[in-house]
Length: 180
Image (cartoon, rainbow, N blue to C red; front, top):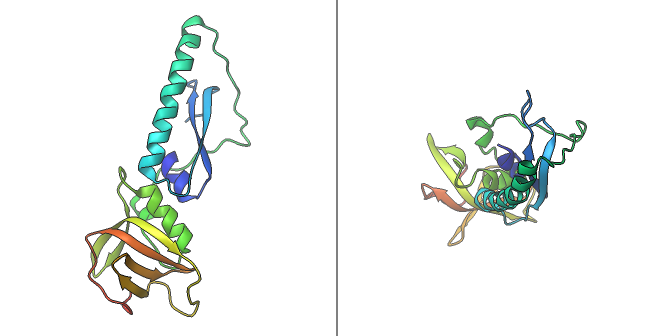
């Protein structure tokens, strides 16, 4: 789940990488690699598309090298290599004590085609598909309190700042002052 983790962790770049197979997970020598910029507006779908386009470009360049036997190999720098664990459902649960930025990145990372970030409200799982960070919010409000409901969504106080829930499934019918 490297695309999910790259977004959830708020990274500014990732890469499309092809490896030579060895006994480990993505631990073989690098055949080819292309860096990919992660923009603030990227989510799982847009980043997945960027990686797909990059991978197709890399394949076009690698196939002739593989066929001719002139493929360069780059030994990975183990100090810079990173392996992320498999994500589980609990990783996608929103905790309103998190910062608005962390919640926003979680939503971005789990957006479609993935399963969506979620929280429980009145014992019902609510999926969150799109959010916006709201800054400069009063600090003396507990996380999880709804501070505004308007045509643009629901604004919820978080551990730091607030977050506007733009798209949820199901749509929440809730008023200001309530808690999630």
